[in-house]
Structures are given as structure tokens and as C-alpha cells.
View 1: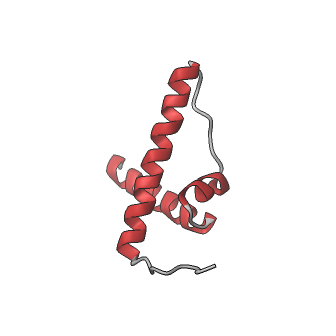
View 2: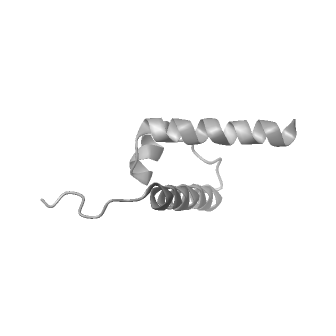
Length: 74
């Protein structure tokens, strides 16, 4: 009804997405521990829906993270 009353700054948005991604990882890890099974993989769509952003945003985050990992282990 009221739409988005408060605009998120890019910094606040990044902090929110980071916190939500960490929460998702912890949730899935705990589920795997409790069920004594391997953690279930998630699609970009599932991650985006949980975090509240687009699949493209998740793709960019993934690309950036992989680039950082390659540089770290190069």
C-alpha cells in the first residue's frame, strides 16, 4: 500500500544482503548437522528470494567472491 517509504543507501543494502547471506549459510549448515546430511545447494533464485534482491545481484556477488578467492589462492 505505502510502497518503499525508506530508501536504502547502497551501503545499507550491501550490509543487509551480507547479513542475510550469512544467516542463510548458518541456517543451512544447522539443518545439515541436525539431519546428519550434506547441505542442500541453493539456486540463485532461492538465494535472491531469501535475501530480497535480484538474481543478477546474487550473480554479481558470486562473481566478485570467486574473483577474490582466485586472487587469494593464486
